[in-house]
Amino acid sequence: MARHVSDSPPMETSGAPYPFPHLSLPPSPLPSRQFKSLPPNPANSPTISLLAKATHPSHLPQIHAHLVKTGAARNNFYLSKLLSLLLRFRRLTDARHLLDHADRPNALLWNTLLKAYAHDGLFFEALSLYKQMLRSGVTPDFYTFPFVLKACEVLSTGCAIHSSVVKLGVESNLHVRNSLIAFYCKCFAVELAQKVFDDMDERDLVSYTSMISGYAKVEDMERAMLLFEAMPERDFVSWGAIISGFIQNGCPEEALSLFREMQLSGVPLSEVAIVSSISSCASLGLRSLGLWLHALVVRHGLEMSVFVGTALVDMYGKCGDLDNARRMFRSMTEKSVASWNALIGGLSANGCVEEALLVFEEMIGMGIEPNSVTLSCILSACRHGGLVEKGQYYFEYLSKEYGILLNLDHYGCMVDLLGRAGLVHEAYEMICSMPMEPNEIAWGALLGACKVHKNLELAEQALKRLVELDPRNGGNYVLLSNMYAELGRWEDVEKVRVMMRGHGVEKTRGCSSIEVDSVVHEFNSGLQSHPNASRNVQEVGKIVW
Image (cartoon, rainbow, N blue to C red; front, side):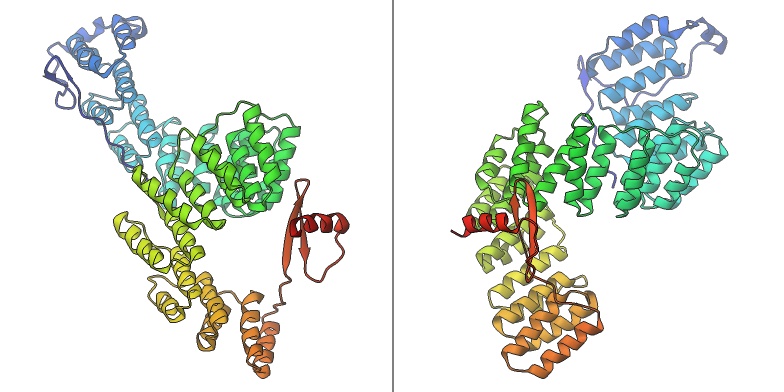
C-alpha cells in the first residue's frame, strides 16, 4: 500500500513567506527572441554555481527569484536542477507546484518527480502524475516506466502500462524489462514475468534475482533453485534472495545449507543472508549455530542493524536462551516494534509470563505502538499463564485503543485460553462470534479443550468441522478416538478409524529432536534405526539426569 508522506511546513526567510507554492511564473516581460541570450551551455553558467551552493532550504527563495529575474526559470535544464533541490530538501508539494506551472516541462522534469513519488511510496500520486504527463503530450521514455511500474499495484493497470511500453518501442531496454518482471512478481503473476524473462536478449543479476524472489513468493522453490543454479554469476543479493526464499517457505535446513555454500564461495556476507540464516536457527532450535552466526556478525564488523538484532533476540528466545535474548535486546541502540515482539514472544514461550507482560507495559510506556503481532504475543503469554481475565482485557483493549484488526490468530489464542481454563462453552461461543470463517486452529484448540475437560458433544462438532477443513490431519481423529475409548464406546472408536482410512489418513508418529554438534537429529516413536543412536541416547541421558 502506498504510504502518505507529509512535507515539512514551508520555511520563512527574513520574515518573508516562502514563495512556493504561491508564486507562479509571471508572464515573460521579454520577447521570446531575447531568450537566445541564455548561455549556449547552461552547465557553465553562474546560475548552476548558485544552485550547487544551496545547502539549506532557506536558500531556495533567493534561487527561485534569481531564476525568474534572469529568465532561466523557463529553461528546463535549470528547472530540473531546482526541482532536484526541492526534492533533496523534502519539499514535495513545492516540487509538484513548480512542475505544474512550468511552461513546457520535458520528460526529464516529469521523471524526476515520478522517481521521488515512487521512492517515497506515494504510489497514487505517482500514477496521477503519469496520467497528467500523458495528457500534457509529453512522451514517456525508458526512464519513465521503471518508476511507474514500481508505483503500480494492480495487475490490469500494469498490463496496460506494458502495452504502452511495447507501443513506444522501449521494451528492449534492460531496466524496463527488469521493472516488468518485478511488477508481475509483485502481483503473483509469475508466468507473465517468466514470459518477459524468456524474451530477453540480455539478462543481468537483477533479472535472475527478481525471478527467484517471484517463484519464492508463489512457493515454487524448485523453479527458484533451477534459476539460481542457471545464473552465470551470483552476488550477495541473489544469495540472499534464494536463502530467504527457503526460509519463507518453511525450509530452514535448505536455507542453512545454502548459507554454508555461500560462505565457501567467498561471497561477502549480506544482511538478508545473515538474518535468514539466524531465522533458520530459530526455527530448528540450533542455539550453538546461532551463537556462531552472532560471532560471525561481530567478527566481520557487520552493522548490528535493527533487523539483525531483532533476528538474534528472536533466535535466542526460541532456543530457550533468555539471558542472551535479554542481553541482545538491551544492547540494541535502535529497536522496532518487531524487536519488542521478539522479546515478549520469547519470554512468553519460555514461561516467563509476568516478565513478558512487564516488558509489554515498558514498551507502551516508551510510546511504541503495538501491532497485530504484539497482540498475538500478549495473548499467548496469557494463555501460557492461564490469565483469562487479562487475556480478555488485552483482546478488547488493544483492538479498540490501537485499531488492531483482530485476525484468526487472535481468535485462536482466545479460544485456546478459554478452553484451557475449562471454559469450553465460552470458547465455542467465541468461535461462533468470529467475524470471519473459523479455521482449523480455532476448532483444533476447542477439540483439545474438549478432550481435557471431557465434553464429548462439542468434541464431535469440532471434529466434524475439522474434517471439512483439514481432513488429512490424523491428530484430530486420534483425540476423538481416545475420548470414545476412555468411555468404552468401541463402536465409535472403530467408526473414527474407518473415517481415517476413508480419507487416507494414518496416525502420525510422535517425533522428538535433539541438537548434537549443530545438527538436529529427529526420532520417531517406534523406530530404532537412527545411525547415531548410541551417541544421541547419551546426550538425552545428560538432559534427563
